[in-house]
Length: 406
Image (cartoon, rainbow, N blue to C red; front, side):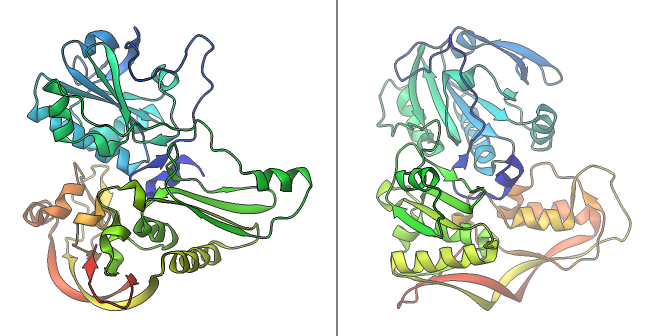
């Protein structure tokens, strides 16, 4: 799996598989260790908005709580985490800082930050901090406070309540994120390799496994393998179904278990599917759906339904702006893929003939603010109109009929 594929990952963890060998002189830090005495170079938006600057980490942390937010260029949950923390810094000025460390091509990271109008300091590319705090999945958060490593967590722990508790001298109950640096191979796979046997197929479920996270597909000389680690039931289905996040409908009575919005580890599962190399993606996806239906005793299936949505229509026929924004198809795709689809019900379709590009700024919040979206579309002769259209959706149901739309 290459990093470009991370664009399509929707659970709240992405696999970060470019962990580098650690220099011999650097030992990974743990909770309670002192903040390393290092200076980060080429930090954007630290001293000014136009150039990069050097940032002495200990000086940056003096007198404030700092969260290092390790993420990736194509990891949308990472972008959501950084922007969520940036908003919290504005409610706690002078007491709390966030420093996103975004893995990826520096020019592309800067382009992303500029388009999304980031004002916070951030680092593009790898740094020594990757060796001090090695990790397997992202977002990966390291809390630094009063000269020490206070906590190492996932993004779920970074709530306003938790941050305020730390600043008030309390020690919240953090669930420590303890990543494995390399995903281990199971014994059966080792035996197959040693004895040159042919693996025809295999699917496995487990409960929550601390240290794993995200999606990890890969291909060997003999088979294709998918690993989905610590997903909710609904997010497992989302990996198998090539539909937009808001094309899922939940009609199962046990919706809290299936959605797992509270990220209860009792309702998180790991799943591995291995199939012959010649198996096409559609067959693998159908096998996943069958496995999930059987394992969880529910019924996931495709349907065509008449549903309320918003059509983007109208549009002037000329190219209004040369700004390197999004095409209308790309904009509609973005509106249909919010960072937190479980709280978003609007669906958008494109029925316009407009072929120009639309300057973007920060697009994702527009899906939640229809007046702001209408205002952004108006200069191009476009508008979002509520309609009913027949859409292909994926329904997760049981014998009851309690509908929750995403």
